[in-house]
Image (cartoon, rainbow, N blue to C red; front, side, top):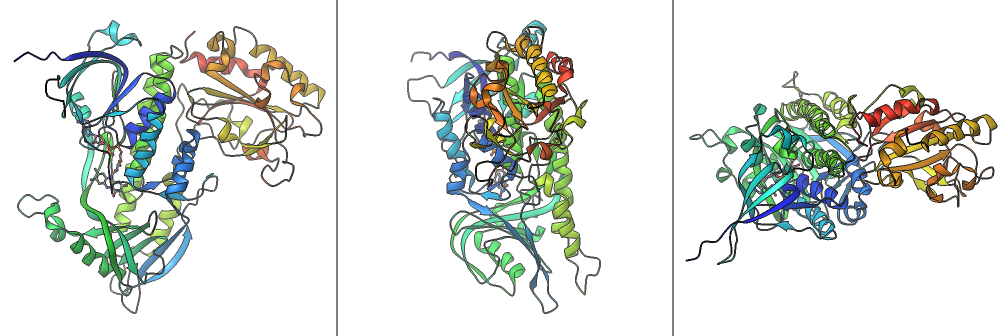
Length: 605
Ligand SMILES: Cc1cc2nc3c(=O)[nH]c(=O)nc-3n(C[C@H](O)[C@H](O)[C@H](O)COP(=O)(O)OP(=O)(O)OC[C@H]3O[C@@H](n4cnc5c(N)ncnc54)[C@H](O)[C@@H]3O)c2cc1C
């Protein structure tokens, strides 16, 4: 029999795992024109179950990739939350209803729920539009990261050697391939092979909470079945998540007796069934009744609340998503955190691969996302404990009251929506001139606000003008250019931007618009100025000139953007927005040198 030689190949980025984190990684890299491959051990994509909740910030990110409309078409929207607690008559009664999202600046003030398979399918189609397919069923069997310092320091070298095995190779064809990658992203879930191969430990512990999940179409007299509902009963707790169509998901609190195998001490799915889960849920719902018309999927799990000790090895192999943080799914965070991880990482890799940034930029991934993951675990511990503890009642005076639970729900609202994500100062988060845009918090995502285009008064949401295209956006808030002195200041700024020693040309090279998108927003009124009034450097395209003024019907654009951002309407400011939509720095016109310094700290000439 002939010996089949392993194929050998090079790739810029290899993504291992095609769950939410991996698909976001590959999609974002493919969109940025990066040479990327993605593999998964599963022969087919997920068909049902697993994660299903998309938070407001994730929706904003999807919109920045032009994908949100698919989720709006297919998913369910959650606008209201209901709370149920023990009633003096026995069973439970409703104790309150509040907004599902209390992050006041969320552009989309709701959650979308849709099963993970449908979410993945949208990304698979998006990836296919760039000619990238998930290669499956394929697993890595060995990985070596070069120890050669010179090789590791060269951003264009291929220091990671990975052997892949195709689990479904055709007879007569080699089933192994040796891939030399510049960068590897391990998005291979909670039991991550990549994490283990790197010897990275998980810090934290297994909690005592065991939960069941049941996806079904219900028949019920429960009045809040189409609202997210937290049911805290004397017979256990249950969370209702309405889903696409008439489906719902139930998260059901279980006891050790329900779910743990006494011989192994581990959660054992064999001990449970959809029927048994439903029996437990029914006790929480009483006096309401619930019955499935159809069960779609179910599972049980014990919660591990852990964060990886490191998120990368030499900024060449990264881990993302469940591979670096695990927690309970009730807060609806897992898939969101995982996708935002790779949304944070991929533009940095794209910049390094294009030769625009040096490799130090990649260190900010672990710096920003590990801190976020630790905050996530803190939230999860607090929220899980409150949800799993016995509710207050006449017999249990020390239990969790409705007010305590509501307060926790509301106080974590900014965090759980993703809107509150706030990256700490670093090379790419410079807070020096915060006061020049006092409400646009540096390190947070840019606030939504509608402006009009100077050329034709068409309203635009600023977030739609700064897509996830791996470019920095330089927003020049030009102030009121009808004032002669302000126009003079703007001209001086324009002259500086046109000079080779300043960031725009220095790091943008021959074609600055490839690396930077310059958008100019004046506080002058549409009746007073034309787009052509602005110095040429500010209008690489006529469309890039906006005004903070009302649209023709004063319905969408209110002319209040400067106030929303806390920017002086007369004098303006420069705002740098990172490619992932987070505010990187703010500066007054006279401090271009500080913006130069910001970019010099990670960009290359
Ligand atoms: C059984 C199960 C039930 C869940 N239930 C819920 C829930 O009810 N609610 C909720 O919010 N979240 C739930 N989650 C968690 C949620 O799905 C995750 O938080 C989210 O999917 C994380 O995304 P990820 O891409 O990091 O990981 P995953 O979605 O786990 O994706 C990892 C991918 O990597 C692939 N992979 C793994 N190992 C290898 C390997 N060696 N080689 C190649 N590919 C590999 C896997 O096949 C998978 O496609 C569940 C997860 C699982 C596994």
